[in-house]
Image 1 (cartoon, rainbow, N blue to C red):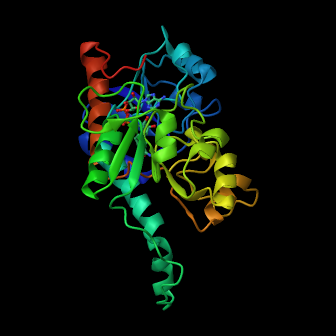
Image 2 (cartoon, rainbow, N blue to C red; image 1 turned 60 degrees about the vertical axis):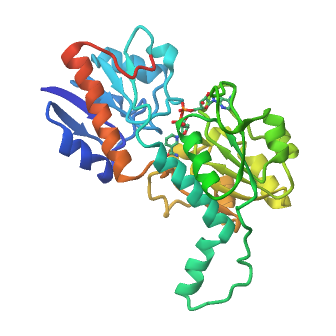
Image 3 (cartoon, rainbow, N blue to C red; image 1 turned 45 degrees about the horizontal axis):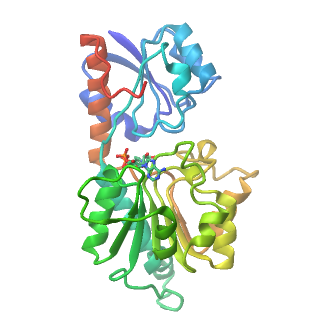
Length: 324
Ligand code: NAI
């Protein structure tokens, strides 16, 4: 039986892998994969990392030296993988789309929470405070949403927004032919949207796509949603815009420097990231811990496709869903 090292394991990760796994001896490690923990893969022919694991050149070289034959990412994004380092060393596969609905629906959840202040109302009524002061939102119907990235998740988010009667503007350097929504330039999208939602991958081109300059082009009082990757947004510029009201609210499921914090209970941490502390303390920010993917369907599909990727490799010698 092939031995597989599974990194950054949480109880909810194991459920479907344990149910569906037939062929592998999976070693579940709570540690994230990095230079210090890579030796745990000793004796394993594959590793299963997640979004906040480190797969830089040193870690990949160490995996290669340990005899690891394949890296099976249990996620869609792969910005944490040094693909050049992996090339001609270890194939890297992923789960390209395990539940675009999970992420798109969660994005709308963030928007509704933020706009209608459901998070505040929840705490008020628990305290027997039934005042409505400060809870005024606006109708989404008739508003314009700008969607940056019209792949699997972006397209579903567009459909959801249309269900609310919103106008949609989209930007993507690789537009879908015959799309039934309008593509505009990034500049026009920034200028015309009441709500801007990020659904593109993190690449050299998209790093800090939301920065001081792009924020300056936005409508006053725009709302920003980011359920894609933290580095798409320059956090300090966002913080300034939230403070001066240029951006009226932000729904964030990801954060630039999330690796050290997200998925973990850090409530006893004294030395906290200053920008993250400020963001979570702001009344017009709803910040969640990279949980947009977290549905039963998504966890099932992640386990299913990851195990299929391993089967294809170990049983047929095929590399399916490869990124390298
Ligand atoms: P996808 O690959 O189907 O779509 C990405 C789209 O972004 C493509 O249409 C592509 O052409 C476009 N794009 C590429 N460069 C761009 C640029 N410079 N500007 C605008 N658009 C650009 O990916 P999918 O499945 O829709 O996922 C989108 C992102 O969502 C992923 O890259 C990942 O970062 C994030 N994600 C977040 C999750 C969470 O739990 N918060 C879970 C899963 C994905």
